[in-house]
Image (cartoon, rainbow, N blue to C red; front, side, top):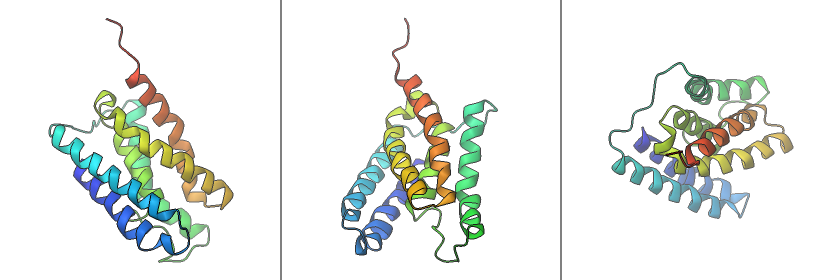
Length: 165
């Protein structure tokens, strides 16, 4: 799955931010570079962790991850359409930042936290930025970023705490 996430991040960086969003926001070029860097980190993590598996357990964190991933794939666009956006103006999963970030967080919550803790930082920052934009720009489907953020922070913080020996 990490190579798939890397590909989506590359599409977000080059396709969305650099080619599309940079026409209306000069900061999009910097966003593009960040997305490309994240794609490289995810690809590197895939090489270093070829045995990484995403758990199918029923613990709260894994279930929250599954709900977020499903929402990113199917619910995000549906909520956008219900809020009055018309297709194809609805942000698309895999090629636009917000649903892709929600999906990334969902998958990372289903992985062993100690193995992906450093990969959680960038989507957490993106969730905070995108979540604030959800409020300011009234994008209801992106409120999932704000819902996912505290869960992600708690899991990452727990994974980064030194274990008692």
